[in-house]
Length: 448
Image (cartoon, rainbow, N blue to C red; front, side, top):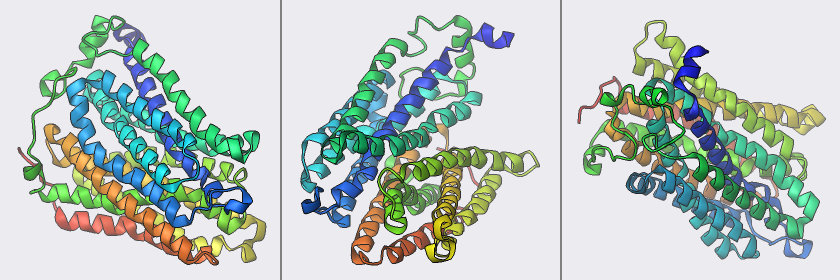
């Protein structure tokens, strides 16, 4: 306690700001998932008359632009710094998030707005990760990253409650617009706190010398100090390593599953259990809430193995193999989600199963990101992470397009469409692990 007071704790204020920005980031992107029912309702019944495929186009273009921009976002933020980089990113996504409220029901205009929205959202994680590197010593970075990253689930949980309430309180004609507007405005409120409270450690007036020295205790081994750029890494060279492709396919095979849970879970609950927009809020809230614990479990499992003498990379891959089996639980959805057998309890069983699968994804993701630092020197971690983000986004686009096509194809039998999707979700992790293991059968740290 006395040591904490002597060193200071302002760095945790910065971590809290990143937690809130990530929460806003995911809250804003989740709004559209709870508006799907309205957008796909026939025009005669007051909706926009979209098909499932058209809705998939909107979310897919967002995902594609988000993934493509992630690679450039880190480079831009290195150039202009984290303070302006994260601020500009949030302004862009908030402006275009609000703009969605003013384009009516035209699919093309929503695609355009959602694409620019994705460009803005892409900056949050590169800026946040760089900020953690600037403000925390090595031994605290994993904890700080875990804290701010939990905002991804918190944001999804808030959207699950807020958007259905908004549609009920304001009515459908105004409610969908207010959902975009209110969530977008929250970002500008956050900006006030960001500009007041944030500066790099070297320039911050509220930072004590003791805390500054503590933050920079291992600068000799750290590539990032304040706003200086790291050593440039050749993209061609990175793509020549099997380790890069292992991470690429690990993300490509599994990120799409999370995008599916984010954008299509409300529709699944409505179609199979005949729930209303208001009724799906709590089941979705529970799924995303349970997923938070998956991230903690994912980080603790390899640590348990390492503490018992297992080499770090082997422990990581062993943990990922164990985790990869957990999503197979969704194969039981046709049975436990059968309303004829379990009647009113079927929905609860289905939500429980999907909650476990979503938690498994977060556990897998926590370890997958860490394999990059296991295999690559620090100066290449950002670039390889960007490549993986692009791969994950591409996988997300394909999964969402497939979900749209299948739900249109089996419009009269949505259970069959979602059965196919959940089969894909079930085996994605095992296939991803096998590809990674075949590319990198044994650990070898790359020297560059």
